[in-house]
Length: 277
Image (cartoon, rainbow, N blue to C red; front, side):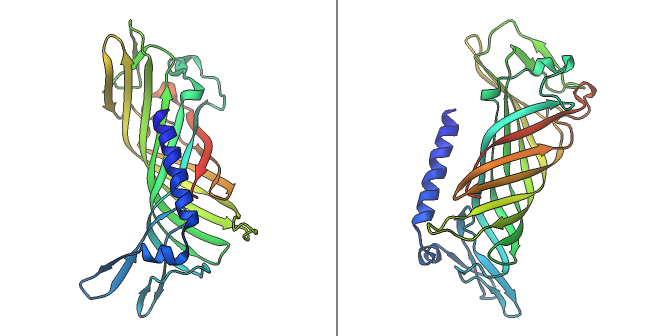
């Protein structure tokens, strides 16, 4: 929880800084690097939609800052679409876990989803519409209720019942996320804010699974394995909001776990707040 609070603080601070900057300030923050052909390519670190526009023409890329959101391609390193919310398990269409999955009983208010994007490439059609593909990271932390240990290197997802009590028993997955976003924004109001709607498909590539436990007997322990998490997950997402903050929801069509028949039909749904989108 302390980590989540710290993340929110950083996001809001970055948002405030960006809101106070002007196009000229943004241009001064551009990093100018020279290629071997003496061509200049400008790369800017941005927050939210603050990514430089690159117009492709016969004379090479034009990386001039365009405040009027002219059509063109864009590429940038960013820290955006910061999702902070809850994760929910859906067992064959039900929010109640079946008997085979009761060992995954979890504390809803401590089961979280967190993620953000660090790269994006896209094309803007006009000030209202654009499409882009991005890359980032996504974590799902399941806070287990039971004093169990999910087993590593097991033929199927399995566990053992422990004789000690865990003050924290967290079952987590980390994915590289690659969403394809269709972006719409309304006209700016008098305050310079506008409504945004972003939706599209998303794929995730498994990076790691982890069990983290804290107990008086063993202290803090961490165990890494793939834990039969789906190596490739496919889903859809939607984000909508006003200003720098909004709401998001994500649903994955394939099962959370693979090669584990008892978990067939167990899927992941996440929702919460999103920043810098």
